[in-house]
Image 1: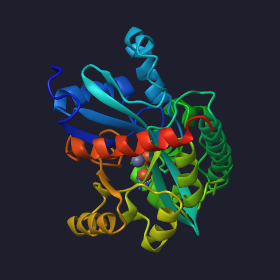
Image 2: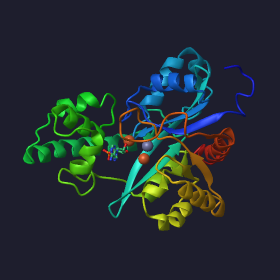
Image 3: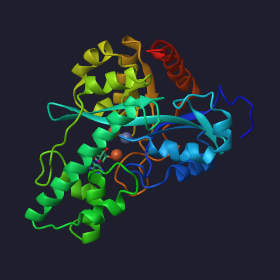
Image 4: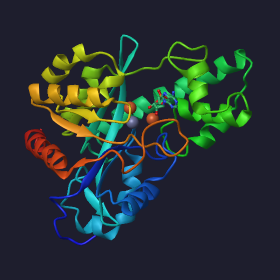
Length: 306
Ligand code: AMP
Ligand code: FE
Ligand code: FE
Ligand code: ZN
């Protein structure tokens, strides 16, 4: 990519997973795919981890060190693709899953925010251990090592349990594993310690990041919106593969009403994962990235020196 217009034009996919959580492609592979498909900006938004972003930062190597003036929460370029550091926190309230995206969050392993993510990942691991016991009781023994071999990164989740169940021949797809055993309320479901949606928004904002409600159409609790806005919510993910065109319009209208940024992304997890859309097919204009950056800058100034 040439430098021309680098900061002002282009298509952005603001919601992509990697092998650091339950995506099937490494962060490096995701960036190559963006390059091939003409996606100029990508937000790496793994569940409860920023390890994928850190892997890319280490690839950028020298140029990253040279640009150390950049804080650990800035976007950066790799193979001509702009990478936005992000995270997706699966919060829960009244047995409803509410996912909150945090853009421009700090990726420094020593930060207070990173310590919070460590705690969330430990709760994931505890839950997977409990699910192994539950599956054994149900007559579907699955070795923990097998599950962890699918979790190539550091954030283990139910999709990895599902992949191990497919390998054992208990189900034919991860989707089926969720529908029959792993989904909320199903026989092998075990709850885990979650943040509430308000806690997730506040943690992201306190860390200087930009908080966006991910695929609100899947949560079925629009009534939470006002409370989240009061606690610092900055945006609504309007464009998402799980949203109908009507959902997209409705959330875009709500975003206007509450002065929120209307974002969008593919939630790409990789082919055959049963989750998300195709990389490159769910993109928003660069102007959305500019709005996110404006909030980040304002917030960075507010949190500086605290
Ligand atoms: P966990 O993070 O362990 O709570 O698992 C939730 C993740 O599993 C979500 O973020 C999705 O990526 C994935 N997921 C949820 N439902 C399904 C499904 N029906 N089929 C495949 N993956 C799913
Ligand atoms: Fe996922
Ligand atoms: Fe999500
Ligand atoms: Zn996601």
